[in-house]
Length: 274
Ligand code: SF4
Image (cartoon, rainbow, N blue to C red; front, side, top):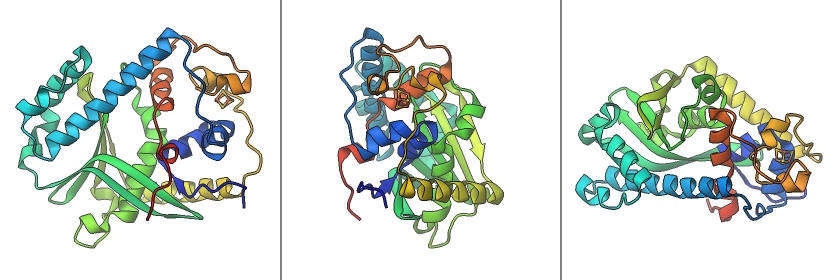
């Protein structure tokens, strides 16, 4: 049993562990706040992150029934105005008004080994026999589908919906084949990333999640990643002597990862009661 009292795992903490055990240790075991931001690109990142969080709030308000005219008044920066206009005009999202089975900001959880796995969904939309997980992304670049497919978020969100979503389906667990996950990009409204699901993928994902939870439960060593490119935007660089300033944005994935690393996680906010 490790010497820390972590009780929940999320896609963020699992992604950190998969990317770099040391990062997981600093963030979730030692609970270190990341050092003060020192460079202008990082400040821009934080500003972009804040606008992204606000955009999520606007979408949630709209999905609980607040009229678009009212919500759009709150989109008061150039980024927010553009994202909101794209959201309002997106063909993919147009059917929402006709759906009764909308669950914005739904939280699901289930036991995972010695932990509880927790996920907060931007939107779960149920229509007849199909259930779609929507996740809004405000990335400045459109990441590759292969990169998204391998992310813990894609695995956790679909697997947990099968595992813990029965109450949204009249008490019956969803079949993996009923599920699709859609990343909708506020700056690329006509190019969402769609991921269907199968029973074989579900088994693979849940087995992997259990294995990671077991590893985390028994971990005593937290090695630094061998892949120094993972350090470029890591907020803990100075703890690891892996550079002080952020590197140049080399590709879409590096940037999107940077945005996620500055995100606030459930575990940093505090314990969650069940
Ligand atoms: S700077 Fe690199 S080695 Fe250190 S926690 Fe971040 S990713 Fe891991």
